[in-house]
Image 1 (cartoon, rainbow over the protein chains, first blue to last red):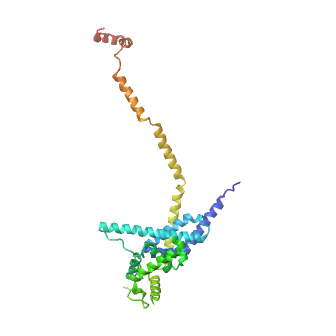
Image 2 (tube, chains in turn blue, green):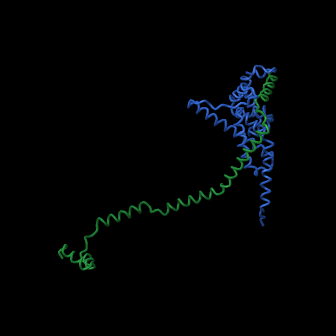
Image 3 (cartoon, chains in turn purple, brown):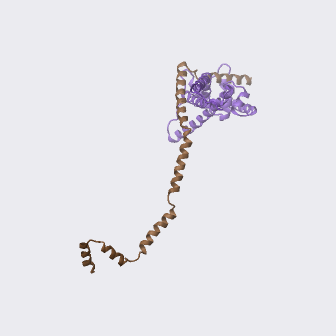
Length: 187
Length: 118
């Protein structure tokens, strides 16, 4: 005999789901926005949009993942994909704006930061391949281990190391002054 | 030496290339917007189970309409039959004409006889 789900049990299930989601958002909000911000090139509004898209997808998929760790890995994978999609569409918009003769959309930079330095870093990261940028941000800026990063991007550890090496070479050539211990010339 | 420079570079990138932490107000706004989006997504997904049913009903209606419509060959055939009937219609049968004339009232019959020389 199949047991029916009573109204109160269903309501409890919904409440439990909402509570679980709220906890997940509270735990990962800051990190998700920061990671998205670094991946989309320092645009705060775009970073929040990307993070929100990933959270909405996580809400839909919540029932598929009973284990928090699996949901987390899946969520960050979605976030990486959303950020890559955002960059791709922004590239299309910028090319279109160039063809149409309009000014490209400006990237918002908070007033507290050094806008020139951030733009330089964003431009240097922009010069990397999408995969190099992803692994560099995950490992060197977000502090993931090579193994964690490999699991997240679905590549072998050796491949991740190779991307990291090339990414660092590229950045070193463009941001050599930042590698000087006293800070060098920021502008 | 180069390793130290790389470490310094990484450290500077980590500290310089980071957004301002979300203030409590921004975090609350983020959560509020997210809640609205989740609710909207929930409303959309409530319709989702009905979509296959609507598609199946639409497909059935289209198939039924196609099935009930006369085939083009048959329609042409019917039109051809009418045309042939008109083209090869036999001359008026005088007996039938007379029988029809007898069915008329007397006044009409008298007028008809004047015109038709009967």
